Length: 191
Length: 264
Image 1 (tube, each protein chain N blue to C red):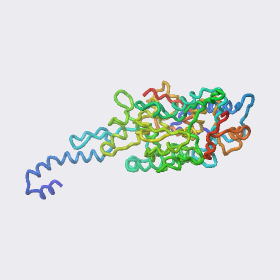
Image 2 (image 1 turned 180 degrees about the vertical axis):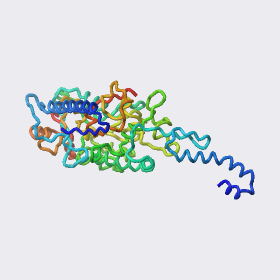
Image 3 (image 1 turned 45 degrees about the horizontal axis):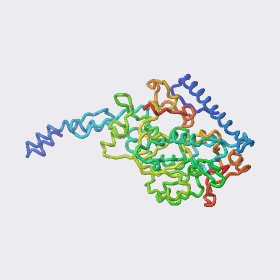
Image 4 (image 1 turned 90 degrees about the vertical axis):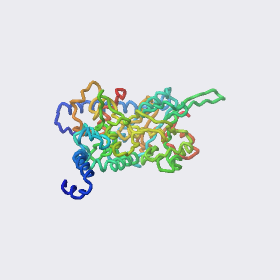
């Protein structure tokens, strides 16, 4: 590839030199972009920095590659089912794939002071990518952008004096009804 | 009573404590319902819910809203109840009252407490007026985008994904039940998304109904508001309506509201 470039552009030696100088940086940048999971990939002047925050769940409703491409469709499909048809759970009683509440609960990001970041912060899960892609979303003009209560992933407890670092998110398959019965009161003042 | 817990960790203690907690809270809920089922309609008249009546929890989440059901409410205004308690419960449930720049008359209210006074006799009373969940809802008729909608089970609500904020439905509603959000909101509750540029109104706490709970105002009303299925003749609300009747506000408009009143 190097020789090939050299051959093609040999009539302009300064251009070739510059290209060759930049090429490694370009390749590194491409590699970082391809490995999308990289946390805080510094790209030294090749565009804005992307930070893909780690989520708290074990796995998402679909593989990451599929989620990145298809999440708008899933959200749109399930919002019609939920709001207009009153379907709030799948046949097995688990949460719908496109439950924005569940998305927020798993993907909420905390800042240095251990507080959830809001939608106006670049660290917010949705913002981190959407800002890079220059896609403006208006979901959170109405929807809540951080979980309710103090760091609750699933409403297994009454949210009082619980150390959530011991709770592994995503391992409990409760229905929405169960969650409502277990923890009917969620104190949202802690945020 | 089936408890659907699939704990992949096989952590027995967690499952046990979780199910115990759940059982106790369900028991509370059931006893709460039984207590609410013995209702005084007028002084001296007690009504009891029969065991074979369908309850909220019989309706599976998996099926979604069904037209076999029509949810309705019966408000007993003869009871000495502070309706503001219901309003507070409503505000808390839906996270209302977080406007900072709106005037009082612009702020969202799902329930209004209306004072009525007969000038001749001097008799005055108050009643809570919320969305009346009409069978032929004018707000649904006039909505240009299909945002104002009636669910299969009779609940009238706004699909904010489609609402363009034209406020035609506010003009059409004879009960003045709808409000418009004039400013950017933050800190919404996770069950009631609401934001600038959308019309909103009482949705009979759809999120609670779909979870097998009663609406927030019903819970806070000390039995003065009864919630139930109007299509089911065995439900307590239907029995009371059949025996003692109930009035719809502006019944002359023939909209057949799902909210009934006694003592007006």
